[in-house]
Image 1 (cartoon, rainbow, N blue to C red):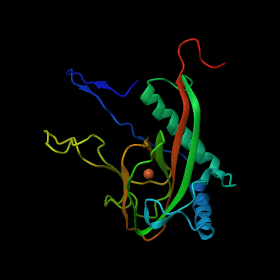
Image 2: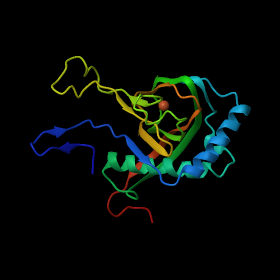
Image 3: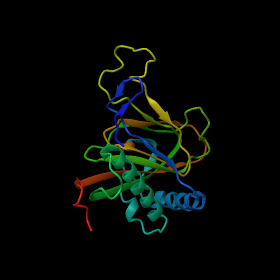
Length: 220
Ligand SMILES: [Fe+2]
């Protein structure tokens, strides 16, 4: 499995951009505890000014917090990394390896809050896990959605039939769901207009010494 696809009529699709999404099972209790932990943390940590507007962004030390609830989120991030790396290498888990550094931070958006469009330089993958959508999720109204820009240069300049190029792609938040994607993919969060706090954990993955194992040289 790789990223390029050949259709039955002979048309080949190239330059695909992988976006991982999964709703993890049985996360209700975990998310309730995470929400409490993050809201308490907000009281102690003034946060850091990043892309969040009208909201709070913790220090980038979420995976060092002393709570056991951090570990399942780390597992979710690892899961996304494996799936995305399988897609870009065309290899299964165990057929590639390297040193991965996970960096995460909690984000709270309140009414009118959003994230301006940005990328995460120096990282391989980025993503977000939704703890609590604050009641405005699945509204269809675009409240607090993550939105991706078409990364291909100038593709919006001349419309093609069907207009598949140059469009933004918008995904709704859902508690227990994760989106993960290449860190270079420009993205932001549309204004959140719910009454309650919208809580998420965002992350970056840095890769060092990545390698794909050839036949016969897999690690023992
Ligand atoms: Fe981001």
